[in-house]
Structures are given as structure tokens and as C-alpha cells.
Image (cartoon, rainbow, N blue to C red; front, side, top):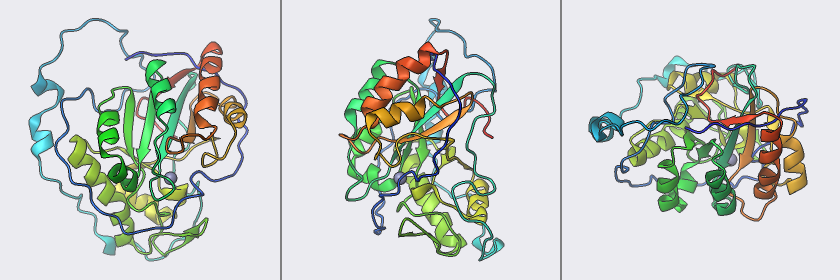
Length: 311
Ligand SMILES: [Zn+2]
């Protein structure tokens, strides 16, 4: 794993949404899948906090059995036993930073996690290839949050990205709905309306990713990044940490490249930046291309979620 340096500054946050321009909800269809090919270390393998990964050393390639136990792929998908009847049908909080939502990494090191949502839907299923190729070429680790609609529209691309050790794979929901137990809305998008539908919104995509990759994501972000605190607890009980951001990187891919670069320039130690990888032609790619070398020059490194505990 290569580690690079990245930059920091004061954190100025603009309370604007992530994927606000999301599409209306449509019924989701489950992607069929085949087990993923051989791959490297799983993104859900958390690293000990503040421990520098060993520098690149040539190590004997582990055997296939060690790298990816076949049982992990063949294992039938089963949902954690979370009983929807065990949760209240009403909640007290609503927003992007309700109880239980993580927005930063707990570290004093100059580490920044870039996270890119792939929202899917009729206007959100594009693929910003220039952005992803830049990350690969410059070896910038990142965490990609996939909605099932995007996966369904880009199956081969998803499979290829899931094999990149540089990227962590995370869950961005099934129908891209705010995660609620009582049907609250954000940006005109109606949220899930019961504990059971919140479970489905999380787990249908989770299971699709597991079928395609053999791995279960450890991180979840809802469509619109809105939640109530009961729904967050449900996601936690399903084994996922709910991750938003402290740096609004591209405001739903509406920022110009200059705005994106300026936003990323406000990152500080442990920041999590929210951006999008589904809007080619937006300012996101060029903004990231401008910000990455600048942040590295300021001593920052880019990391994937899971490399530090969340706060
Ligand atoms: Zn989204």
C-alpha cells in the first residue's frame, strides 16, 4: 500500500447537501452476479489506528486460499438477525449529523479520506472515468460509495473498481432514499418509512455487493446523506458504520473545479470529504486533480476509510 502526503487547513463547512439532485426513487432491481475474481486485501479490513502500514516491500504473494478464502464467496448471503419490531416507529432527530453518524477520522495525523458517491438513477448513473483514472495514476486511495442503481447500470465497471486495492467499496443504499423510520423527506426525496424498509434500503445493496465481490462493506451513507437516529442505529446493528463528512467536496457535483479545490483545501487532520464519481463533466475531477498535489505538498496523505477509527 502506498502512502502519500496530503494537505490541511482550517475547516470551513458549508451546510449544503451531498447528492441533493438525486433522482426520484424507483423500484430497485437486484443485480445478478458472479463471484468476483481474485482480489487483494478487503476494504472492510480495518487497520489499527495510527499504525503506518509497512512500506512497500516485496513479499511473497500469498496463496489464493490466504488472500480470499473460497468459503467467503460461496457462503450464502444471510442477513444479520435484526428484528424491525425491536425499533421505535418514530424518531426524534433528522438531518446529516444525527446521533451515531460519523463525520471524521479520529487521528491527529494529516490524513484525509476522499469519499466518492455513485448515486445511480436516470441522471446519476454516469461514470467519471477521468477522475478515477487520475486517482489510479496518482495512487490516491479513496472510498467509493455505490448505490445499487449505479451498480446495475455499470456492472462491469463496478467489478473492475472493486478489484482495485486502492479503493474501498462502501454501501450507498438500494433506491437512494434518506434513511428514516417514518418516511421523512430530504430534497424532495421520500425516505424509508419504517424500520423494515430502512433495513431493506441498507441490506439489498449490501447483499448485491457481497454477491459480486464476496465482501460485505463496512460503511454506509444514505442517498441525500439524511437520517434519523433510529435508522442510524439500525444500520449499526446491521454491522455498518454510517459515514457522512466534514468537508463538502463538490455539493452534489455542482461545484466548479475551483470550488472543489478550495473545499478540499480546508481539510484538516482526520477529515472526510464527500464528492461524487457519477457526474463526468462536472468540476469534480479537475478540482480533485488540482487539490491532490497541493495537499500532498502540505504534508497530507490520503487514506481509505477503515485506516483510522471514526469519530
Ligand atoms: Zn448519492
